[in-house]
Length: 258
Image 1 (cartoon, rainbow, N blue to C red):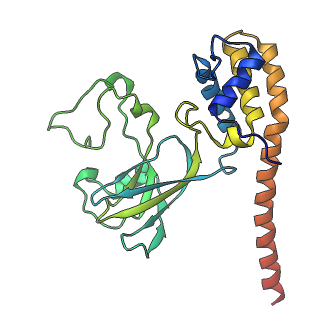
Image 2: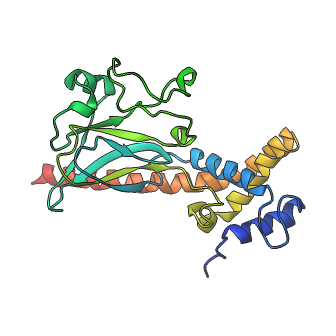
Image 3: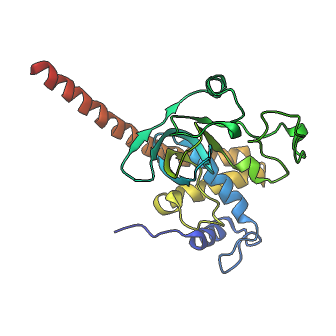
C-alpha cells in the first residue's frame, strides 16, 4: 500500500499538530509563516544529496541568434544535448571554460556569426554588487551586451548557460542536471513531499530549532533522525552506480574472451 501523498496542505497540518505552532499554520492548512521554514528544509535536503542521485532535464527551445540558455534553480549541470529544428539530429555540446571561449570567440557575443552551437559553459552575466543598480553602459563600452541590468531579484535566482556559436535557427536544448526543489508555495508536490514527507517534516522542525528557538541540541536531535533516511537514499544511488560499473566489467570480460 502506498504512503499517503503529502501535498502542501497535508504537510502543513501535520506540522501544526507536531509543533503546536498555530500562529504559523491556520486550521485549514494555509501558511501564515511556516512556508519559509519548509522552503529552508527543502533546500537543505536537496543539498544533502549528491548531484548524480536525482537528475532532471530542463528543456528549452532557442530561436535564431540566441546564445544564453536560462536554467532556473539549477544546482549543477551534467550535460547539454541539442536537437536541430528537424528533430533528427541530436548532438552533445562540449563543455569549455569561459576563458577558453573568450579566447576562441574574441568578438562581443552579440556580434558573433551564427552557426550550430558546439560548446557550452556556465555564463557570468551578473554585475558586481557595487554596480547592481546600473541600468546600462554607454556606447563607448565593449563586451557588455549580455549583462543583466537593473535591480530584478531574479538575477540572483537565475542561472544561464552560454552556448556558442549563437544559434543559426531553431534548436531544442536538453540540459541534464541537478535542480533545487521549487518553493512549497509554488509547487505543492515534489520528490520530497511524495517520497519522503517524514524527511521534510523533520528537516522543517530542525530549521525551526535553529532559527526560532536557537536550540542547537534540539536541532542535533532532528539531524540524527534524518541521517538514516538520507543514508538510505545515498545507498540506493551507489547501488545504481555499481550496477553500471558491473555492466562495463562484463563487456570487458566478453571482449577479452572473444
